[in-house]
Image (tube, rainbow, N blue to C red; front, side, top):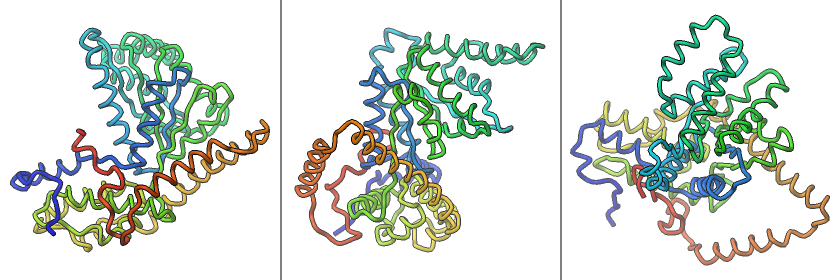
Length: 380
């Protein structure tokens, strides 16, 4: 049976850069991405008491794809409102810059935020502040400008990418101050703030009862090799990427799924970057007809680097296991010994699994079992 390609055949007639851009811009839906996205979207639209929505996951898990999807959907939902309210920006994002001198630069953060909301005359404001002799109150001045801009632009939410940089501080007291500053900004401007980052963001999550009450944490998981279901999903992801590589001969990536898992650690974003780099090399420096195992090996992440990243990931994942233990402790303190609702949920999951599961060989994922590949270069 002939394999079905996922890209327009006319792409093969385009210049190399356009073929490469096609794959780089291609995004797919997969269960962990969909689950994390739905949790964040629900918190943005249906949780009035939530000010901060922490999105935490390993490096390369696909957080950027999630944020891009969030921006797309929030913007689409606000199109009618934006026709009437010309100044409204429904959602935007800013990156938290890594501190250069062991102290997070809030002034730089505020300036980046003002640029992100297209604040008028921002460049002149920057020049003016730079020339002022007394700079002691400049941070407060920029903070007031940010509050005013958020109130005027009326966003539903804004995200902070690389938010784990907020936690790179030597002082425990200053660490506690970081999320409080963000929460205060969210309260004053009446906007949901979405700090997004690696597991290094976790120290900011559990700081203070007030913060816990007004925040939600979304765990964006990788796929785990000790779960047959998750391995099968990962194989389906590989098969979908395989079909969307704009090559004249479709590579048999599913055959090498184990190697792909090994060097991507089960992270879809990491896998996508690896395949993009390999595709670029094949198109520019080789015959460009297909991708072989040797091509994959040439661009694979070194084993030592994988081990280092995996140790960090596992440490972060263990933190979420601890949160489950804390849930058990909470229920015990409350006198709730039987978790009937969890049993009911588990029964429902087992029913769904029994209904949908079809036996098959490893490496031959069923195309309709999981919702894989629902996005096409940003479209559904």
